Length: 336
Image 1: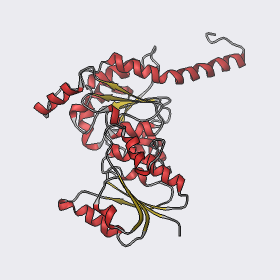
Image 2 (image 1 turned 180 degrees about the horizontal axis):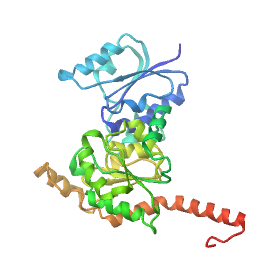
Image 3 (image 1 turned 180 degrees about the vertical axis):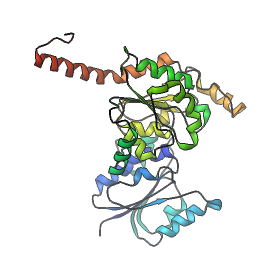
Image 4 (image 1 turned 45 degrees about the vertical axis):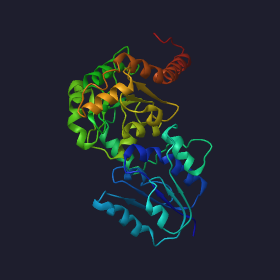
């Protein structure tokens, strides 16, 4: 029998996505290994199609840390060749293992780089997603069949203080999809988790008929299948932002009181747009009033539009080249 590897990752969606690059390294490094992945219930669907997956163990939180006891009970009977514990838990230390490695914080690094240090990797392991046929089929069902290139937005986050104002999302979408925008006439897919659906409603209402309402209708893997079809994703600092970047979609993440140097979207086609208000000031306002509003007001629509156009420029260039080549082949001019 091949190697048996236990991979313990986060209960939070964003952190779990950022750990997929390290898991992908294990898949590539140990072909044929039997993988067991333990994580929170929310990100669990992301791992269901991992090559070599033998078992997926969602860990719903229980009182008195009984979820850890349940995980130990599920894993203690196996002799693991390698345990990779990104939660730095007692389970990783108490199950039988030939080798075990643990996460250690490195605040000066991006989370992806920090995670790569667990196995001493010289190059940071870029997050990756394994999208299965079920997720693709559900995405095809949810998205209009004739949708064409579309804009995807994620207007919510895990707490309202990280959410850019709804009217700015709507204004941005209008600019980008205008006749003179980089995505003329494009539809706008709006994504949010089920509990955040009401907070996304003002954006949906402002967009009207242009909107494709995906709020509360996708699990993380289906969201990945939807978003990777988009021409551009724009959203707040959230797990969905990390899914979009990992899917390879040009991604803009919006940061006010967050930490883009640690949790910014990762990838060559990903950028962070940062508030002009100093973070220390925003964090002080948040500390003084946990329900403080306006923490994202320092991000102007103009700044996000400029960043979006910059990200989309290579796409527009390729489109223009295709049009020019088609016109040349048919011996007509572009304005004919």
